[in-house]
Length: 320
Image (cartoon, rainbow, N blue to C red; front, side, top):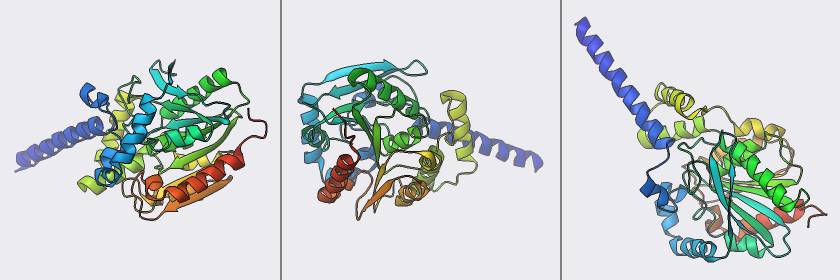
C-alpha cells in the first residue's frame, strides 16, 4: 500500500514538472521560426473574435506602415541582444512616440490603426520589436521585467538621434503598456513627457496566474511557483521582479491609462488597480464593451479625444 502511494506521488510530481515546463515554454519561450515570421501573433491571436470584426481596418493600417518609407534601426541591449525597430520621421515633428507592442506581437496589428493617425498628427514614430519578438533577437518574453530596460535603451537612442529637447511619449499596449509603466520606475530622460498605457497588467505573476485560472482552471500553487523557478533559472528574470503598482507610485510624468470595460484577457480590475496606485498626474479612460486591446477600435472618437488632449497638454513649450 505504501509503495503504491509513493508511486502515485512520483507520477504526480512528474506530471507537475512536465506541466510547468510546458507552461513555461508556452508563456515565456519564443515561438518557432515559422510563427515568428507570421505577423500579428500577439493580442489579436488571444482575442480572435474581437479583432476579426475589424480585420479589414487593421489590415489597411498595417499595409500603410509597411509600404511607407521608413528606417530600420537597431541597438544592443544590456544583456547583448540585438533589438530592432522601425523609425518613421515626420516633417517638422512635434516629438516622437515610442510604440511598445503587446505579448508576442510586433506592433503591426496592435498599432495598425494608429500609425497614420500619429504620423499625420506630426509625430515621429519608433516602432520597436521587443526581445523575443519580431525582428529582435532573444529567446524569452520577460513580461516587462527586462523589456523595461530595453525601453530605456531606446529612449537613449532617440535622444542621440534627435537631441534631448525633443518631446518623447511612450505608448504601450498590453505587455508593452506594462513594460512602459515598469520603465517609469527607472531614471527616465527628462524629455519623456508622458506615458499612454492601454490595457496593462500589474505584473507577470498576476497575469499568468489569471490566464491559468481562466483558460485551464488551474490554481497558482504550486504550478506557477515552479514556472517562476524556470523563469529565474533559464530566462534570468522573475515574474514578480517588476511591478507596475510599485513603479507608478514614484513616476513623475503624466499617465493616461486606458482599458476595455470587457477585457477578460487582462482584467479591467488590473488597469483600475494601477490607476489607483499612481500618485502623480493621471487620467483614466474605461471604454465600455471593449475587449483586450480593442478600446480604440470600439470607440475611436472617445479614444482620440482623450489621446489628443493628453499629447497637447503635456507637450513641452520648447519642443522642436
